[in-house]
Image 1 (tube, helix red, strand yellow):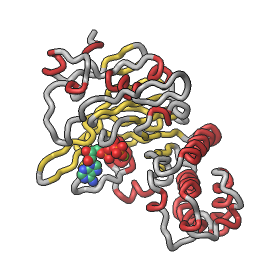
Image 2 (cartoon, rainbow, N blue to C red; image 1 turned 60 degrees about the vertical axis):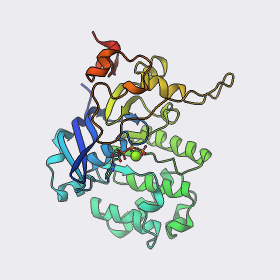
Image 3 (cartoon, rainbow, N blue to C red; image 1 turned 45 degrees about the vertical axis):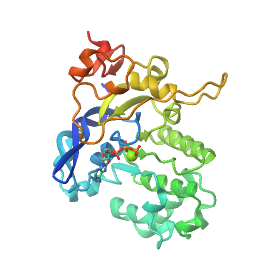
Length: 322
Ligand SMILES: Nc1ncnc2c1ncn2[C@@H]1O[C@H](COP(=O)(O)OP(=O)(O)OP(=O)(O)O)[C@@H](O)[C@H]1O
Ligand SMILES: [Mg+2]
């Protein structure tokens, strides 16, 4: 039996704007095993961050509300926890790193103080122990001369270094799950690949399960074992990374792959997926992808397809109706 650390079941999260319900996550289910790396890909607005924030208990309410489903962390439903209980889990058992590291660091405190703070709070360490551990963590994320740098302030760090500090902070309490929400989009390409390599190393070294969110399939190709492709608040494909690249089934996944620049081989014109996703709150009859799909049939216009098993993959498309 796999050791499941997180199980999201039929998660539904909406925002209420002018008394209108705008569903952002519309029934998402997945599992993460201990030490697993799972990627979520999908275009802007597909509900990736809302899924992550729902797990962390960080959906602002109002305007947001979790409408249904459950989020089981080692079998316990996080949606039934109080804010006080969640504070013990967040940053401790489940950590998250965000897109823009500058906004998550406090400019008026030294890096060392900020790293030590969560260790003192969650792990009951003394100031001295916390400082020692902070230096250890900065070494782990390969920050040069950490003994000197813990006395510095966030503005003295480059973007890539700040993201290393954020990763150190997220991992300092030895969490079971690390959620990384587009942690490299604000960084330039070489720094991006260093950070990716670091996350991959840390997963191997510490055994922390990773939920990695990105809109770039290329980024996850070398990092994750399994991939969820989200479209308009729903999972349209759920497969191993090998299967996603070798045998993509959903027309949207195929479109994403075709719009990826290829490093090797002759230069080809990139194909983009035509059209646009439905607007938030737009009521769609049938498949949410139908207006952009080359394979659309009458059935697609009438009813939304369920997730079908195709080989080892799950695919939300009528083409795979049994
Ligand atoms: N605080 C909020 N208030 C209202 N609507 C929101 C809020 N946060 C998210 N949404 C809506 O929820 C939907 C999903 O947003 P989400 O941030 O999860 O997208 P995403 O997949 O993370 O996109 P991106 O790749 O741009 O980060 C969008 O339609 C967005 O407008
Ligand atoms: Mg996002």
